[in-house]
Image (tube, rainbow, N blue to C red):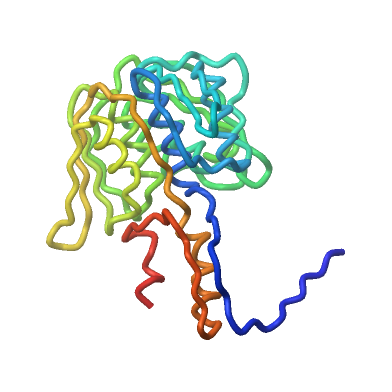
Length: 274
């Protein structure tokens, strides 16, 4: 058994390197796979969850390689994922599973997704319902949990969907599916969830607009069938991981630490206002 002993500290000083943001890392891999051409990703979080997403994309025919500290993704386009001959094993990556379900809709392929024991207990119904409305055929013998079999439609239907809860994963899955629709997909949620997918899609060429409505709800409109441009994606450092260091410096008098390239996003950094 290992023991951790914490002792009182009077001052923290110096520079600390914070790992890349996990949410951005998943999206960078998935969305760059849907681009045309080669994308360069710098600062990718090299964690078990992110590698599970990466390996699933490789199984779908995406070429992903590391060179000189950066990752390079050869995108296959919105409609170019290949039908896998084995399970897409997402391990414990809930973000990877939910976003990939939406991303592969336009490729009209049959895919089987599974996860580890923990992920297989987590609900997927809130993702599966809108994807079915967009044309997917889905089979789950585990009460809408993994393992799941999905067959993408020949034509993805645009969707006008109001979510009962604010969820970046529901929103992202619908938007990634909506890229393959021949019309406008509209997503609405009670409050704005983290907007990483909208911002990344916009930067890579998607026709996407978002706004907060008078009642405080949030709406995103996405035009279908864009040509997503490959490009350079710099993954910022994770503000959630940085929070531990920030709090430690705040509670230790006369501390001065330096954290570089931390992502500042209103949906992720509310603790800085406390």
